[in-house]
Length: 337
Ligand code: MRU
Image (tube, rainbow, N blue to C red):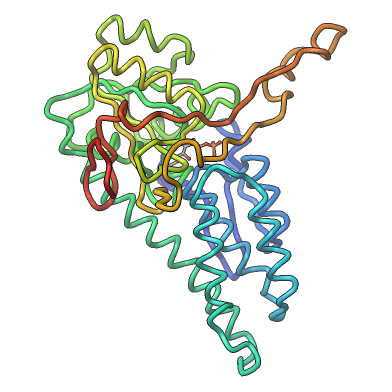
């Protein structure tokens, strides 16, 4: 098996096989299920994560809820359950709605046994395959930004672990590296859940890309030392005006890049652009459990009473984003998609 043969999700014999990302980088353990509830839990627990991947997994889960026999009330229940898992990544909602449309447009009374299930699975697979293609094109489109061998700063995880293909921002880095245009990658550790030091480090290592991990709070000093040539990050939801929600800490990098006159790019498939949301004010930000921040300390009188602010995402205003790399090309401010 090649070092890069790991995968995030795969449909095998009508069951979803997924890599449990909470165990990385220590264990590469795959879990197999056809239960939509188990997949919903996996999304909530971040065993499956990253905007495009959440959408793909939810689409498979909704289709799998109809594996035995078509049951509309179960379909609705599964749809609502999956929709409630995480609020920010728009891919979750658009993928679920795509699968739902198959049912809406289908005459269930005339259906041959199992036919609707096959159609639902085919739609989920199409969402998966299309994401793989979009990742490939994002990698190609982003290459034009590398005018020389560069040092890249990235945040969170945007690779194979977060998408149905080779990644978004990560695939731009990977394509540039394969073209000998990457000097070094700096990966923010991405507190509190360490998607940088656990997952991006895992993927950079697997691809033999030279990298360093830094505490999120060290980014400013890296800019001050002149070590950053370009910032590349992903997105969970991009509003119509280009305001972009991504992992908490992304906004910090955009501010730093702006101050230091360094290009700051977001890479995302067009499925992450939410044209029904005008701007940042319409993007729901997930607040996560206090234990993710404070749970590392043993509980005592002080720690058990500490209140925690733990938003999972922040929003980078569009005017701080030099460009948004999509499968269709690179968009620039003022954004019109
Ligand atoms: O909470 P997570 O790990 O799901 O957050 C993921 C991110 O913020 C990614 O940067 C984003 O989804 C883009 S993935 C291509």
